[in-house]
Image (cartoon, rainbow, N blue to C red):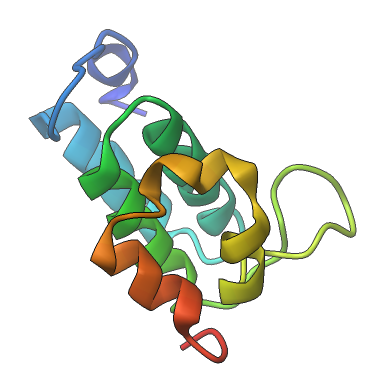
Length: 107
């Protein structure tokens, strides 16, 4: 991978820098493994106080079918799980998160 050196040197803390954007685009195009790192990105972003990034990742996740990344046979995030998962407590007051959590089913 030609950009792996640049990607591994990126430690930006807010917004997407160009190497983060390239990496995210590559992940999103990976139909089999792509959603797993996006879920992890959503969880980390929520914990690090980056609601825009977390919600964008959650919107993507709820729009594609996938299996959960954290262990085999673990369900993917659903609106019901968003309402229960304490990792997303920091997003609870955000109207965008509330809209995602109120959805009847993944879109």
